[in-house]
Image (cartoon, rainbow, N blue to C red; front, side, top):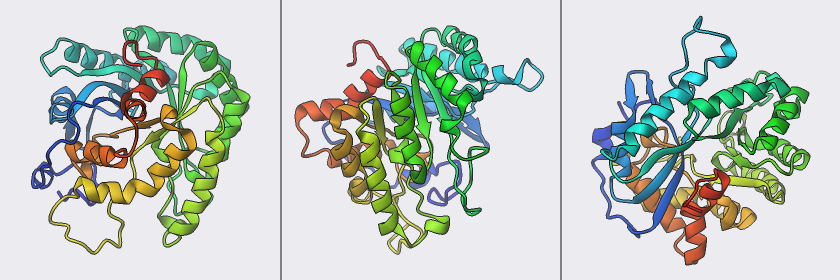
Length: 343
């Protein structure tokens, strides 16, 4: 299976054709966004994750990102409780890592999960159950609200402006009161909704996923300059809210019009060049203290290896100070997710 076709499983043979020396191998990294799953015949669980974590970079800890993995089966209880299965699953994977047989990294040291935010204030007891099931690792919720009026865009949310829904706002208030964070994944035309939520709940830590997910396909294809300008203006507005962090990653490397050699996977120089405008804009807007590099593995593994991904980030941060690097690669993530000893 070709790794650059957008299918779920990566092509390990293709990725192995390119191996790079590790840049700055002693730079400590907290990977704040990765998944674990059995999906479409593809396994990415602790052994596969550990192989990537131990491939050369100094990964000290990771954050599990909810991905609808290992949910309880239908009929095993109320629908709202099905996502507890994922939290229980992650606790088990974290325990395997803590046993020390998969390397020194604290894999799944903390996690963020999924709850139905439309439950409003009634979400509190469910959040308490996630916290208990996680063995103390549960740090918050991701709410995916991607929506666009054009039929050419895949809508994740059932309707527009879900972050303004009264029920969702009630649930956000519960998160803030419980000192839990809120990961937001939506599309770039919706970024002002994040700013509005941040204004409504200044005590809520919000983590914007994937640089705000600029849409470059569908009705936006061929309009990259316009998209970039719209996205940049919105990113700057969101960054004015001091309770919002941004994750740097999960961007395209080779666009559909790429005419270069596809027989080899991209190296870190190519990845860094493709990502530089987006990532530098975010760091300039949010500052290093609220910006965190993310692998988004194994999704990103369809296009590049773990070695290359983090080498690319190190190239992008080459001119940063030692303190800024400490934030970009570990400190911001540790603060956003309250990871003791790693701040």
